[in-house]
Image 1: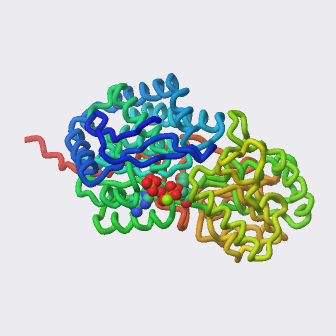
Image 2: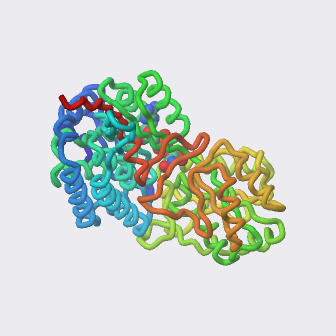
Image 3: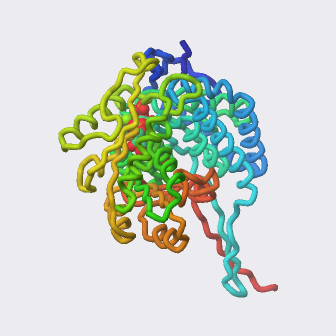
Length: 478
Ligand code: NAP
Ligand code: MG
């Protein structure tokens, strides 16, 4: 069984205590994960603190060159990363491969972007010269969840390092492997000791110790709203910046003038990708009333084609953690209590090949109203609620009637409508005629309770730097 341990000050740290991580395709233990305590957290933050002065002083092109080397090495070693990511998350091969490639793309993108990242000169007229500098914070904590571990590690860590910060990463305990591997790989590519550390273990135990450590100068957190709120409180207490990438209950809106076939496929992809364990999932499907019944019928048919299981080429795999699996089964019960009948799915199944893995069938509920719990709370599984609407105004009203505001989809061939609705939607991402679009270049983040700040794109570099303005009085020539 593989054993993952902390990576501190450029080396693996021996650990006394370990927890087991499980392969969700079988429910069997697949790796052992070291459990950090206060001593390891402190050692990692101190190491990051010691490494900071030299790392921030490096010429950006040199930092960028190292990040580009990490991108290349990740692509060369993609097979190892995919295998570990698959065993810990259960996702199908193509999904895991895409996540590793995306992680590499973050290092590639920020490794290049850092070369053009600069301050500005501000005109103050004759006699004064003013300019801005974008300076790193110091040691930053990057705390990530279990649904796309290597992708999210790259997303948080690449811009942090590019900007000249040092990192202490804490991956989810269910899926620690690829982040631990990434730290070693980065070190081998020339990241100096202490610049990129990883501590493993229980988030509820070491998360607050890490976020609250006086050496940490910024926190980037991806995960649930509840933990995000805790992290936000710690950051407020310490007056340090925090970015929060939290959950969603995103609307996917289909107008009668949409390309029907494309919208059916997009609706399917929106809520079933990685078995719905995607923060951006389009889990509230709003369909114009004139096409509602035909659309649901076509979508149910489309969803029944989905191949679920442990095999390499499955469309979707299992739910990554047992507790999340049980939570989804709980939602099936909640739906029954609310008087809903599933158009497909809605109960645990026993299909050939599923064995003791944590599989759930994609599930569609119609006849839902937006006030129901199942339309308001994030499920984080392949569960869709469908609601009809009469016109554009009603679609926008239902879409925005949510505590969340992460993403939204719009399906229409009318470009004026697309632009109007995209402008009216309260969410950080809007996709038109596709669901989940964009790249490492496009900013990602939430409106309302979906989060604070932005990751990806140049925005991430803004969030990993603090702005200084320098103003110089020019002395008269003597
Ligand atoms: P979570 O429980 O909030 O955990 C996220 C991370 O925080 C894990 O590393 C976890 O460690 C750690 N953690 C747990 N309790 C902590 C505490 N008290 N203080 C500090 N850290 C703590 O979330 P999850 O269950 O892993 O992931 C699912 C959630 O993440 C969903 O709500 C989803 O929408 C959201 N998500 C958002 C995005 C986005 O980009 N917006 C992306 C993916 C997921 P342990 O694993 O050891 O508990
Ligand atoms: Mg959790």
